[in-house]
Length: 115
Image 1 (tube, rainbow, N blue to C red):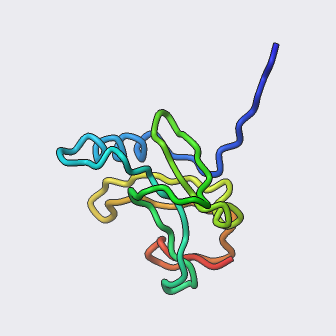
Image 2 (image 1 turned 60 degrees about the vertical axis):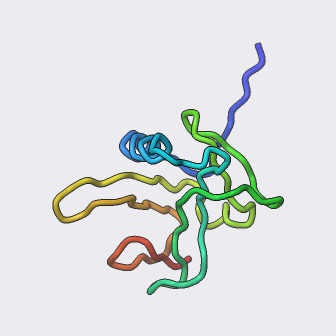
Image 3 (image 1 turned 120 degrees about the horizontal axis):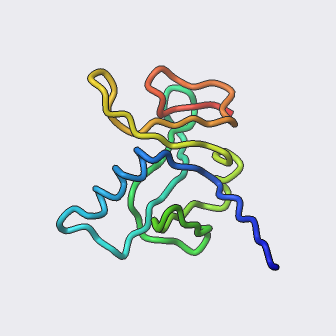
């Protein structure tokens, strides 16, 4: 019996997956785009999370989470490996949240971090 374990770089909660699927089902969604997970410089703590739909690029790594095609720059995995992305839909907080075990500190808004 051949057993293969695939370690995904990030995880999505059920709420995040549902919200992403809603976005993908919206009229006019460009089905050629993939869900990009990444980081960029900036924000109050030094780095900011990237989560959005984008065209794939040559240096992307590809993975799939519950049928959702995702891409991430290979160099970003060291900052994001093991991160969980959730969706909050409360009165005081609505949007995607990031729980990153690699962050040494995060800002109050939750979208910026330091390593």
